[in-house]
Length: 63
Image (tube, rainbow, N blue to C red):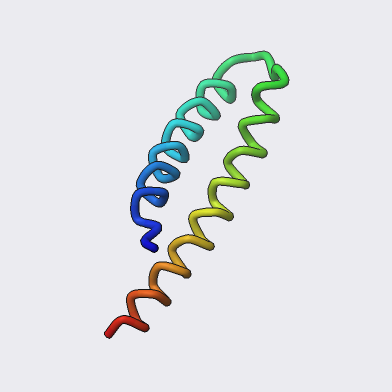
């Protein structure tokens, strides 16, 4: 099974989360969504690291 579609989706999600984090940082308020966004960024980065490592391992095993 390939993880490439999930890596693409989570990469786009990370980009959108960074844009929303920048929006919250420029505004004066820190709503609950700001802290939820930080948690989502951490989860997304952790998933991407796991997925990329697994995909590299699978590619090297196929050769």
